Image (cartoon, rainbow, N blue to C red; front, side, top):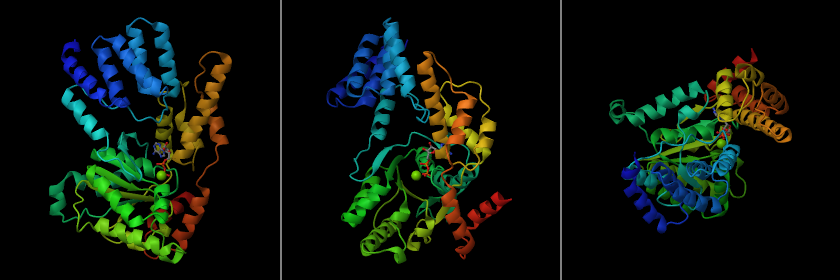
Length: 412
Ligand SMILES: Nc1ncnc2c1ncn2[C@@H]1O[C@H](COP(=O)(O)OP(=O)(O)O)[C@@H](O)[C@H]1O
Ligand SMILES: [Mg+2]
């Protein structure tokens, strides 16, 4: 048994937790080790501490179930397990492999918690890789070629003289996976995912933005490897012509970003900068020049194969009947990844409601999903209309060629 070899680790974790009471991930991990070590009663105590603070902590519920089963309390075990299953969203990232040795645990611990908590935005472990992103084969191929491969291979990078300064811009209709892809790229690089969202950006309108931006890049540098992600960057890099009132303030923000990206005075090794936009036509062109966000990747609505993968992803771990997902994928042409997530959500709710009424488990059926697919309206029609105008009338630089080709293909 592994019980004996685990003991020093358990002792170390117990000691560490004495100074860090609220560290739930570590406490849950400790509980798992206690179960493995044949000490389920103590495991149950540890899980209970977490659940007292956070009753919907799924991992704690799962450990508590295992521990309760091990002490022979079958009723309690079933109750915990049922709660965990009900709470466990199908979108949850797969649980990372459980570390075994003290070194692995300390390493996990040191990389999963940000060294410096950001004042602006959120930072966390990526938790997913590109394999968790459904479909989008073209996008993955492009990212592999223009971003991941050269990063993984510094020698090749030198040989081709390809500069990796500057960042990558993901653009396309809302809800089609830009944020998801950015997070997955952080996972691929083993980097933390540091997200600056729209509200953070808007705060910068008001606050002392230059200082805030400096703080953001400093935080990214202290947490490297770190993928710094500016979501909805169009809000931040508005074209000068569209700026009213606060224009000069935003100008300062854009200039500061450029200075940080150019990184002449600072060491940005291990900091990867990505941005996303639903409205690339609103982005200040200074941000798009070579050495800045000069590599762009269009993230289009999912094709049938991608839709099938996305549906499967959002239904995994949920009780279903035998499903014809290919048929459902055909029915959901024109829906975004977010629309598909919503369809799965709605079908699940109906099935859960039916189960509660019937007093027994009624799995999600093809019918539930098809009904939901009809009820959920496609959310990207308006975006496509606007985008079509740019592809038709604003494409003198060829920036929208890929989009134009897509629209033309769809017309036929
Ligand atoms: N390719 C995909 N695979 C799995 N889920 C997806 C995919 N695309 C979108 N989704 C779902 O849609 C949601 C919205 O996607 P998101 O990345 O936030 O879109 P965007 O940033 O482009 O607006 C995601 O949280 C996820 O649930
Ligand atoms: Mg997004």
